[in-house]
Length: 240
Image 1: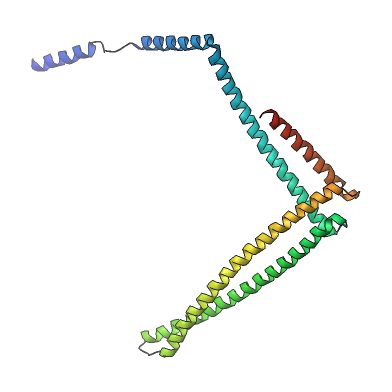
Image 2: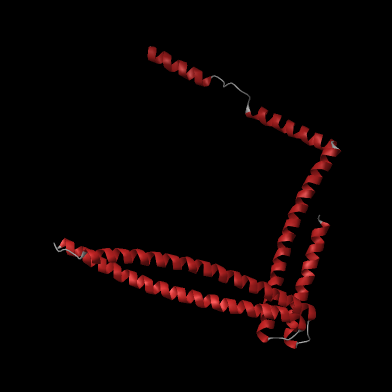
């Protein structure tokens, strides 16, 4: 009987209606709230104007950013063309009074670059020789240590000399590797300086534009880039 009574109570509790609002009332209230917000928005002209200005400003800023990215890309293209043009002028030794100072500077830089490359090559060769010697000393020291394992007594002077030589070689290799790093940084700086001079030489060539048939396509490409750059700058200015 107790079991039957408990079952009936559980069944009755499941059949009792759950507390809370029905789903349809929740959605009805949500729709009413949204309609009220829409009504307020439609009646408030100032709110509509401010929202429109915000959206318009965001769109304008996004467009300006896109144009600025394109402008920077076009400027980089022009710099590359001017550098290539300047390198060509330097290689072909096209004569013009305005080029003389840049030619002189490039001559100095190329001598400096050549000297730096020679120094780096010599240092690297020395490092290779030192590492080879270091390996030989290492093997010699291992041989001395193996003598102990077989009950022999290696010459203490040889052991000491081997240790000292290993230390000196390690220090010399480290010092020369530091010189390699310094030399590479110097070489990189020289090459960057050369690129700036090539760009300057290309700019001079573009300004003078001597009537050389082989260079006409380059002049046309620069003109095309200039028009594109001016157009982008004008469009950005209008969006500011």
